[in-house]
Length: 281
Figure 1: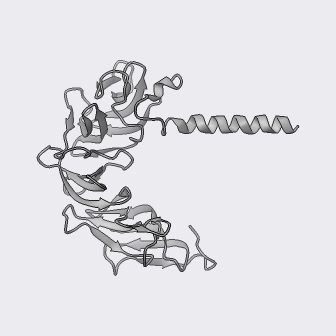
Figure 2: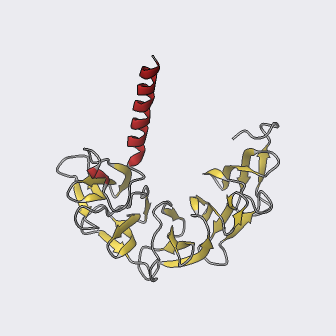
Figure 3: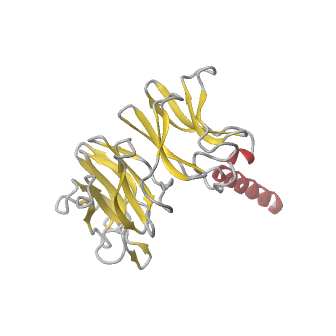
């Protein structure tokens, strides 16, 4: 009986590792070499077609397009020629803005924004106007924003940075660097970008709090120090409802509870202490 239970647990662990491996495999080895299947994911509609990521033995993980038929399904671009992955292993998002889908790509020259209208001819790479180690950080979502601004995350020389783009090389520039973690959970709230980030470390790691950006360096600031001092309030589940952002955060007193924000310090507050015993999230 004991041996049977051990074997069962080992089987469960093996399944879990196999399922997780596709998102954690090294950049230099395409996941198609692990097992059969193309692992299609990240389906995004653009101009009546669906753009997605898929692996093949010949091309690695690349960007594909489909109209839902075998004949209408094709590789958009072999961004990293050969078996290497043009879509980084952490690439999990594509954002549609003004008729184009944007995502994170890589080749032997570095990392780029890729824009596509769902056709081969309409798929191009947008270079970043900076020197290595500048590049797009694939772990953060690329997120569209009102006003025709695309926001994305890339490292600067010694830190992570928030960038903006209008879909052209000339309109792509760094907004702010100095983030010690990866700006994440990018959410459009009435034309304002709200996200989580940290520019310093606390006692347990990055002092992550709620931030905002209007696309300018001076307009990219922390909204509120929800948990005062060098510690994170761990804001999560950022969701826009109309002109209000709802999320969960821990102010150090009430535990993880329901909060809201309109993008201002005074307009960011706990909605209710649902679990007086110390957190309901």
